[in-house]
Length: 224
Image (cartoon, rainbow, N blue to C red; front, side, top):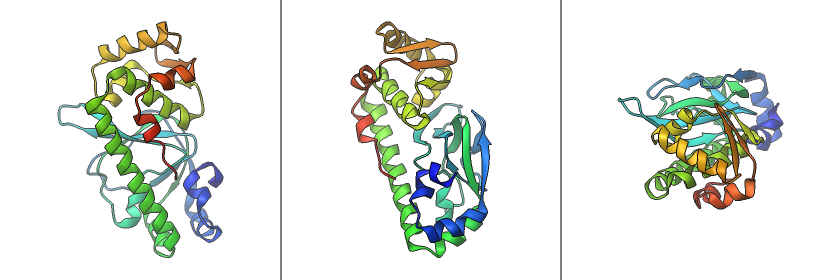
């Protein structure tokens, strides 16, 4: 399954061989919280078909997504650089498969490979850039454009036009109230861009969805 995660697939053969004995396949259920802000990171996840949202939470319970990670990245990878304390909540947005590695074993492999350390640093920089783009998007773009951008990103990582999301979950990820998402979903459905039924969204017209999304979708595309 190494080839199904872009980070693992891109490693030199020596690094792959060093990590392979420590990697285990696992299935991540939708809405599972992998860690909370302040938790000690106890596992590094390399999604293959699962999608994970990194979100900031408030004491009042509100949350907003900062970044989205799928087959193109990893969750908890900073633990190899002594980033053992989680800076955000990681919640499984779309259930699916992942490879999981013990942080100590991953760190040991990383300390022996300059290329792996470089890969980790570039990944964390990319996540930071994604979070910055998300902040700018929230401050400057309307809910409809933001939702379209979010659905496109989720579609890219899921590899499917069928997305099992409730309006409540979408509202949480976008940091808005549910009625705002309900209104936008209705507008997109009436325009023939999506079909929506409770807990399920089908993207019908991808090009129209792209046209409705804000510039942050294109700006947020990042190489691994």
